[in-house]
Image (cartoon, helix red, strand yellow):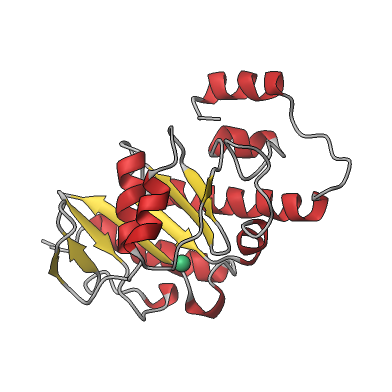
Length: 213
Ligand SMILES: [Zn+2]
């Protein structure tokens, strides 16, 4: 009988996929997954391509490290994301190029850093609020994320990158890819006379798919 939780095997697989997709420049980024009352977090200083299911940091529900190698310093950010999205069981944070670029631009609106560029962003993620800048790994950055009002499954951290949550790592990865693509379009179309989806267009989708905007 295997004692390796399935969630940790998912973590290693999704970590490799993130790197294959080119979303982890310079071995950046981290992920976590919740199962059986604990949070498994990628360790500090380990590439997402080289995660070992048996060598993940294990954190208690109170954020205390229980076992394993030292958790990524961006753990407080993950904890804040779980607190924001009660259904979340996985979180991915990336310094992917397009998210980095978009996170340096002015937010599209008060509620979302990204405009409703495509129906897919609205259907799969919903609004992507902007989180004010604080140093990476700081408690303040987690507090900035916590201070954003309302539900969201993805956010842009100013001058830093993206963070997404999901009911599992597969959904979180889908959302990370969707946010990265929406960021690419926002960067390309910034200040162009582009047509975004209208409020009515967005309302039809959020009602159908249950996403926040
Ligand atoms: Zn970061």
